[in-house]
Length: 117
Image (cartoon, rainbow, N blue to C red; front, side):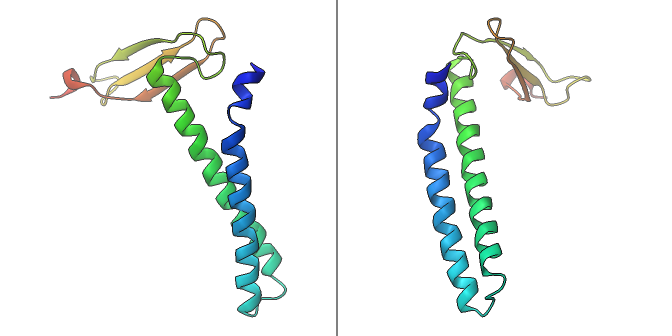
């Protein structure tokens, strides 16, 4: 479990580095434009927004890769997948992934070739 968490470390490090770099840049730009009082807040806001955006993108990419490999993103066990074709209940179709080892469950609207009109 700890090893799976350590694999996220490069993505977190990149997000923190990019966020801090953008924070410094936004602070300097705001300072040069005359916003001396608000420059630190502008820099902090820009840094946090960039870091969170990159972290969420990395988390979404990791989740998508795990689902494509049919491996649980939490424990690494094999996932089971079900698909409900488009109909009255789910107009766009629904795909579900479940892990019997840890109880992880994920669902998303997803259509297949047979779901079409």
